[in-house]
Amino acid sequence: MPENVIHLIKIVSNQLSRKMNKFAKQFGLTGVQIQIIDYLNHLPQNQFVYQKDIEQEFNIRRSTATSVLQKMEENQLIMRNVSPSDSRIKIISALPKAEELQPQISKFLAATNTELLNSISTFQRRGFLKALDKISAELSTDEKKEHEYDAEHHL
Image (tube, rainbow, N blue to C red; front, side):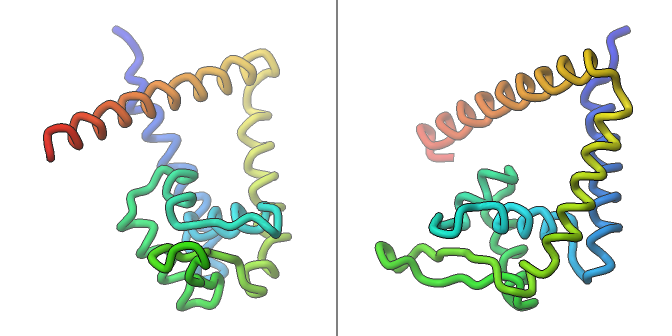
């Protein structure tokens, strides 16, 4: 009987989400908010970031991104300003409160990454990372095809 890959990936995903949320809780945040803060703080200062970028980076739906970003704005972690080129689009930037959290976030993420990768051999690590990239690329291709089909058929 083949391994139930979907089930195994879901278990690991849930375990990582709980670990992220447990860390984030000490700051009154969620794991996703911590990851967005990390993402924003690692971009070049002159690079504009839009909600669409966050949706793509974290593979989340627009409604989820809107909700998370609104909460982060309420908590004074980010600021959303109107784009000079298109008033419908907002530029997202980290505020000092989010920047102050970055050293702790970086330390946590690095330690978690090391913990995960140290649980497998160097040889396994290379294969594992390649496999994850390949699976993600395949699923992204499927999502794109579904989106194109839905658009064509006005679904």
